[in-house]
Length: 426
Image (cartoon, rainbow, N blue to C red; front, top):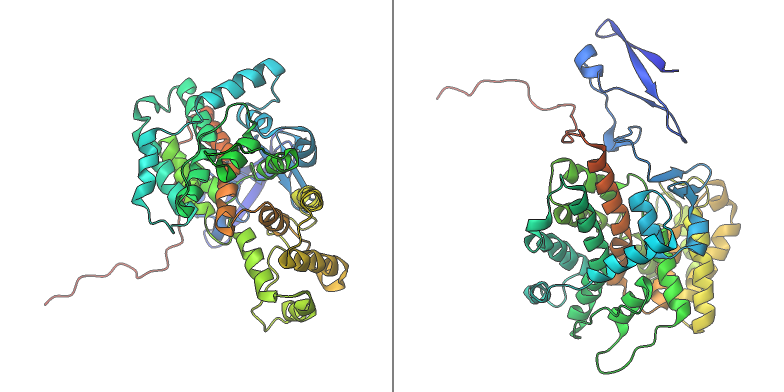
């Protein structure tokens, strides 16, 4: 049964009826698409905090209850039981793959995982100290020049091939940005390795010797990728969808998503965590840092605590906390910064100030610790996030085009500039 709400607009002295749309989970949405044409008035929602910009069946987030689902599957179960490529398949096609489907999908990813040699030449155009995210934005965007004859977005098969290409090539793109930065040779994927292990091999292996990927670290890498694969209509995903609505090619759309993710308020948060830990400097300085964080007149913030969406414990943080501890125990890492982080977590989880405000450690807090323990430089943290999120971006891109008749996105504005005025006579 269709439900409606009545919209009474006093200033306009009009009244209209708007339909209420129901999802399978989460809050209902009032359909205001006809409000301007019927009532002559716009809705005002800066930042789209209360606006559903699309219908999507990919990811569900309940911030109050601390729930994150990919296609209905809890993130905790996927991180524990699935491989990253299984999750990619799930996000792209809606169901977990059979063994035969997984074998075929893995072969397709393997087929596309190399970069064209001329693409590798592009890296020489960047300064050696360029941030990996700057390099990734440029290189991913440049891929459209190599596959321009296979980018017909009206062809479903070409859309899928483009999506798989991006998922397949992103590990080498990210690893090569790091190798170029340190002056090491580019390393090619090894098809016998899994997705996470292959990335570690391309990051830390050397052509002159065999590199053995530790299973504990490979599994941790897969877990990081799974936890960051998608997260509903966040800034970068919305950017991808906005670009896609114009009919832009998939490589340009994902490059736009990478650029959006680069912002410190989005993908750069785990880098900010380590900067904060460096500022604290020592375990003995933690009480002072806690006091500063509680002081509303002090600009110091505890990075990696609380979340814009989650008003409960971030479900991803529980998984990555466990993974971080497993990796730290396995490596036997003795790092003063990690010691600060562990002690800070312990205090914050028992302090009434943080408990009352639900400022729990989030996924960025633990991912920064974990990636540092695995010897990743902080400049690669956001690049790894982009690598993982590519699966969500291409899935959202596919969904938009599969829905059809979406049209170009065109947000409206509340104009507050000068009214009409005439050019003065001289």
